[in-house]
Length: 100
Image (cartoon, rainbow, N blue to C red; front, side, top):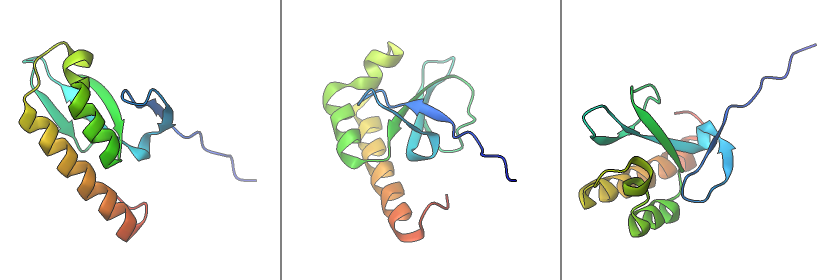
């Protein structure tokens, strides 16, 4: 009998919904106050998650979600980079399935 593995869940800070960690992307703020996309999920610092959905990334940009979440001024270029990254990852997931 194979033991059922627990799926790690994280909260999407834009939608406020709990989702499997694989369906989210981690955004991290380091000690210097720099905000970046954490592709590995292992960067040191304060992390927050958003869905791999372009509409959610655009909503985060409109509402300046990470400015509020991290308490720092996040440049507009970061939000543009985030939208492009999420779009790319969503397209990869569509093409290749769940393999990251």
